[in-house]
Length: 351
Ligand SMILES: Cc1ncc(C[n+]2csc(CCOP(=O)(O)OP(=O)(O)O)c2C)c(N)n1
Ligand code: SF4
Ligand SMILES: [Mg+2]
Image (cartoon, rainbow, N blue to C red; front, side):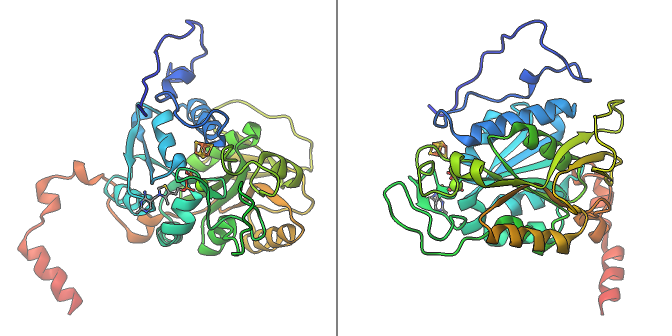
């Protein structure tokens, strides 16, 4: 059995958000992943982010491909819309759903195999088109579900559990997303909830394609000496560019920060990113610098985490295509089928 319903009983005094919902209202069914899998920590961070953002669950659509990572939408936001697609095909299905109904909040969850191998083309086109979505890759550097083969994000020279060395160059999805024009690019680590939750909140509030590469050790096949996606490796090589707080404008909360060490970024929807700068001269609004910074740190064997790039004035696919505001299922027959005269006019304009 891979689908176990969670008992609804909980402590009567659990804290409620502005919608009167507790954190438990954002949970899904019981996880069937290996105990200790990094993916479960990411599900917990998604639940926390949705709860803190007061998201109405029925306004969220979660989509995934195939893999242990792609199974996780069963384990969070049980009251939201969900679609488990074919291996590597989540981005195109999400794009279609988004074009049909722009009123939903789209969350795509994928794996490194799902997005960097079979679905690489799909990943690229969804990002470059600026589909309004949060796209999370739960990156463990292996095909976990099919017993630990190297994926396209496994670093050259890293070793499998059986001692096999990977001779292929790795695809760095963060660098690719930056190059493709993603308007929000971040990397985090499943074991760093303090960093991951605000990143997910900010990504969900971003108007455009928001990409988070989340390193998520597979405790079965990629958590040994020689792996560059293990808990120990990432902890030892982590270089955080910023510490992030996310402030929704309606909240009268102000975070503590030292004057002169922060960058406040107002996003398209008016929400504010409060970046505590740790790295000197790091500017998350400069795409070219972000790419150069990433490359220089990578050359030194460091895994840069944090918000690497954000375009606060991002536009999404709908703005480019000038589509109607109304979701297609709410248009009338007359609006959907405007008749032969309109078709004639359209054809004439193309001659
Ligand atoms: C078309 C197709 N090809 C291959 C497979 C076999 N398959 C299932 S999951 C998977 C890889 C999953 O890796 P990843 O996306 O990294 O997820 P993880 O399990 O590591 O979280 C593969 C190759 C499949 N299900 N469908
Ligand atoms: S095989 Fe790896 S990725 Fe899959 S559930 Fe187990 S630990 Fe997680
Ligand atoms: Mg994987």
